[in-house]
Amino acid sequence: MSAVHALALPLALLVTVCLPVVVAALICADEPPARLRRRIVTRRAGKGRWRQLRQLDRALRLGPTRLVDQAAWPGRRDGPSIEQLAAELRRLGERRRQLAGRPHPGRDALLAAYDDRLRLASRRLGVAEYLADLEGLDREIERVRVEGALEAAGLVLRTPHADPRRPAG
Image 1 (cartoon, rainbow, N blue to C red):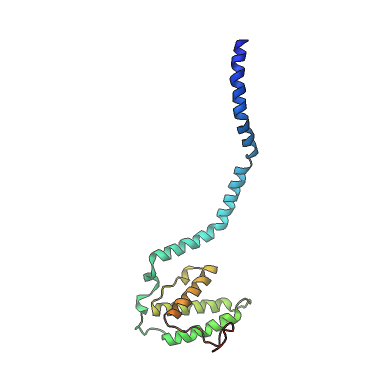
Image 2 (cartoon, rainbow, N blue to C red; image 1 turned 135 degrees about the vertical axis):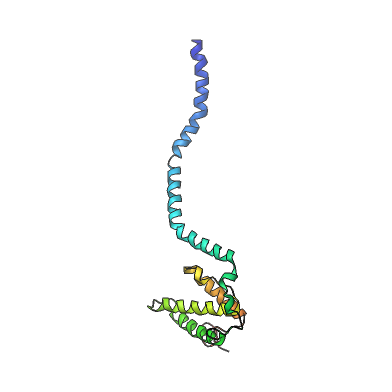
C-alpha cells in the first residue's frame, strides 16, 4: 500500500503541473498552421515587390555613374538640344496631365516617350534617375522626383498657363 501512495503523490503533482500546459497546447494547436498558411500567402504575394526592391537597391548601389551617360554630359552636342528636350517635355507633360485618370489607348506610349525625354534631359544635366529600373507607383514617384530635380537644375517643365491647378500670373 505504501508503494501505491508513494507513486500517487508524484503522479498527482505531475498531472497538476502538466494539465494546464496540455490544455493550452490543445487550444493553440490550430494557430501554427494558420500562421504558416498566412506566411506562405504573404510570401507569394510579395515576391514581385521584393524583386522590385532588389532592383532598386542594386541600382542605388551602382550609383548614378551607371545611369548618367558620361558621353551625354553638358557640352556634348549629340542628339536634341536641351531647349528642344524642354519643349518636348512641356508638350508631352501637358498631354499627360490632360489624360490623367482617364483610360486612353496611347497613354502607355505617351508615358514611355515622356520617360525617355526625362532620361535624356537628366543625362544632359547630370541628374541621377532610376526610371528604367522601376515600375508602377514607384516609377510615378521617381518621375515626380526627376521632374523636381530637373526644375531645380533650371529646366522649365511647365508653362504658367498649362497647369489648371495654378492661377496664371
